[in-house]
Image (cartoon, rainbow, N blue to C red; front, side, top):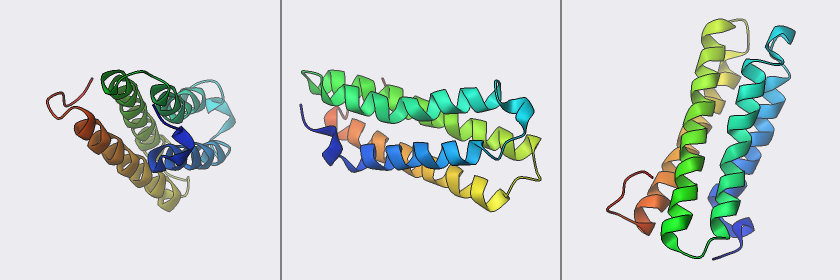
Length: 123
């Protein structure tokens, strides 16, 4: 299809993954294998699926991978919201900005999905 390096959503998803990884370092040690691990998987899934989708042969397939990325971002945002509730001593402005960025990237992905196939809202 196209070079994913040129897609704004891939670049933002990559930057977002790095920012979330940095945030994870501030979580309590007891979350190392629980919430932190889940959050890492969800946040890395988004740019990986965008890149994989760019290598597909059709817009329908690309849209399917964008759907995976979209859902992974929703999972990451939910995990961050859970962090807010479980650990109110964490910097709330940092958590809030990560939640906001995750939602913004999700909207970008959803808009691209709609352009690829306006009749199929989510794969």
